[in-house]
Amino acid sequence: MGDWYSIFTMQSLGVIAVLFICVVGLGALALIVIYFLDASQTRDAVRHNYPVIGRFRALFTELGEFFRQYFFAMDREEMPFNRAEREWVYKSSQGVDNTIAFGSTRSLSLVGTPIFVNCPFPVLDEDTQSAPPLVIGPYAREPYEAQSIINISAMSFGALSRPAVRALSEGAKRANCWLNTGEGGLSPYHLEGGCDVVFQIGTAKYGARDGEGGLDDDKFAALVATPQVKMVELKLSQGAKPGKGGILPANKVTAEIAEVRGIPEGQASISPNRHPEIDSIGDLLDMIAHMRDVGGKPVGFKAVLGAYGWIEQLCEEILNRGIESAPDFITVDSGDGGTGAAPMPLMDNVGLTIREALPMVVDILMRHGLKERVRVIASGKLITPAEIAWAYCAGADFVNSARGFMFALGCIQAMKCNKNTCPTGITTHDPRLQRGLDPADKAVRVENFVSKVRYGVGLIAHSCGVAHPRALQRYHVRIMQVDGRSVPFDKLYPPPAPK
Ligand code: SF4
Image 1 (cartoon, rainbow, N blue to C red):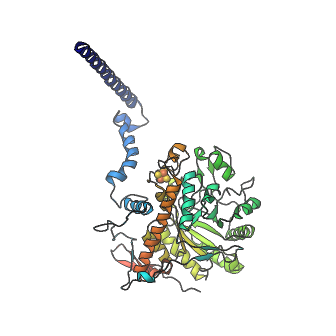
Image 2: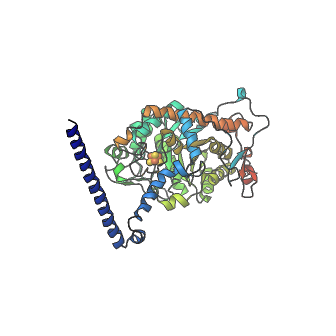
Image 3: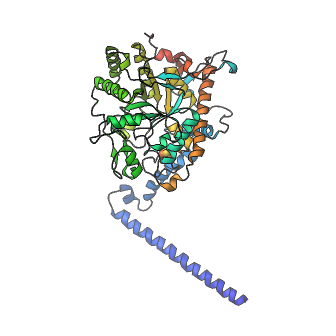
């Protein structure tokens, strides 16, 4: 028995040794082949000059994107959102303790840092109030009384997966905030949770388009008649890609998405870069009036500001026509806003950030006595209570966030939203990857995130001596300057006296 066992063991070891030699030999052969392939090609100079090892550069560049955030980047270093910001959202949405210890990792001397001016006598806890609701669209047949200081910004079904939209819908209902559909049409999943919905209509008029891509009044009226649809947002431009229409890659245009949008299945969907029928201030006001008339709900528009003289002209034209003609709201998007897919030159360098654009728009409306009539919604990279409180100081009536809610859904900032390979199931239509996103669980996280934002912005307001976030004023915050001294925000942007 012992002899047989020894023979068997020796034979096994022999086989393993032969296999090992074969594998090593094949590996060495592959390396030699790759060496000659690299050395003989001239398309890639690095691979030509450093055969084989030159290939690791591309691999490490690819992997670095994933590993930097875990091993190398400091808490406040990454873009577009650093680890500290992401962790704040993750912990808030998970409902776990999000306090921090020992000291802030944020440098307060960075130019542009907002520093709120706490009051010696903060508001007592028992005297604090919730931010009061505001009416939007008093001249529409069905005005909307909006409740929440933080709402879910435009993200289309298509850019987002089905479970992600379902989680947002249910979460918005639980949190009592609105959900903006994005320009990709109104899907059953937006309505499923029972939340208030803002229907966004982009340049391709998805969901309400006629055969030529224009607005089909009947389809539009039927869609806006849905009781959950509370407002309509006409999208002129978006912070991440001003002057470019939405882009949905062909591999994301499933049969269902094609049906919701009214487009062919399996073909890339690229919206026109402008509403063809809106070429002037007059056209814009005409279109808003038409949509409000057909749909009966408040209508506003979303834009990222670059040139801003047109907002002055818009206000003058509104005053000429009468204040009923005004858009019911303006959503001011930040030049550094996010998107699923956009060209880098537009994403990086076109459009003003919300830091400049928001006070400008508010001031122009105030100068024309229209600030009460036209509600201002701020959007773009506002995900923490400090940034949101800053927006209320600047004069926002509401704040929208998209990426804050994506983090609440579990987004890990892998930045592959345009590839249909999102590892968290948020921006992919691959059923395998979607399985990890449980809408019921993530809806609770959406609710938790909203509640922590409200609490955090409230803390800042109370510390500044006002009872609720909407009472924050520009003098409640100072902005750090290049010389290391902060300047009151109302000195940088003195608010005009209201008319
Ligand atoms: S995890 Fe990555 S791919 Fe998915 S939504 Fe977040 S950034 Fe986009």
